[in-house]
Amino acid sequence: MSLLSKVTSKISEEAKILPNRFLGGFMPMGAVKQNPRTNTTEELISSINAHAKDNPEIAEFAKQIKDMNPKYLGLAQDIIDLSNVQEFLNTNINLKQASKIPGKTNFGIILNQLPVVSRENPAALDLTQEVINNSDATNAKFFLLKFFGYDLAKAKGVSEQIKATSEIVPNIAKDTLSGGYTMDYTKNNEFFNFIMHLCSGDSKPENIKILSHIMTSIDKICKKTSPKCNIDDIRLGDTKVIKENMEALPYLLENAEAQGKNIDLSGFLTKNVNLN
Image (cartoon, rainbow, N blue to C red; front, side, top):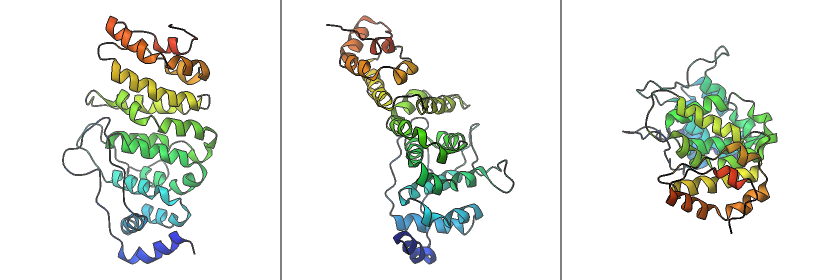
């Protein structure tokens, strides 16, 4: 018997539901930093088993826990919690809405994909956790519905792109979700499409990582100007050339800011330009 199986057996009779970390007073919207879970494996399994007593789809998932990478039990708990969050907003998303599969909800379909995806393509679950930890509940639920509509277990071919994209989720959230509530899913779509564009098989993982430095520099330096940066130029560009030109990025942005110019940043970074 595995350690996880022993733990499951030991605590099954003392199941206790963990507090829902997405409830409690006013919840900020947009690019929101959620503190990562610190629950133990025992606490998470206990909570999931307690939920399973009242929900057959969670009960189905609980039977598969022993086959799942325990690293992602916190994500499973987050998805359960999000399914129990209903906002009084035009954009409220009910994960427990019936799916196209008879007898299944969207929530149940998502939850029961976790064990196989945790084994076959764990990078997809790491990305999902980053999205949940860096955006509001509406965006997290929107992402879950769209992302798990793909066959993630078979998307191992883009795992390196997914890993690189996970590292810049906070930057993407700030870039796409800031600016106030719009009463629709425009920003959520922009966020999701940005993520999926980077996760494309033709993206260069090293270039995706460079994007983090570009976006951070723009946010730090550009207060009056808005540099143009074509994402395709960066993700598909010559990595060596972009890295060489990145050395001049702070100088370029500071100079453009001083002059009030909106420069073609991606055009500069993807060409072998020497500013000396």
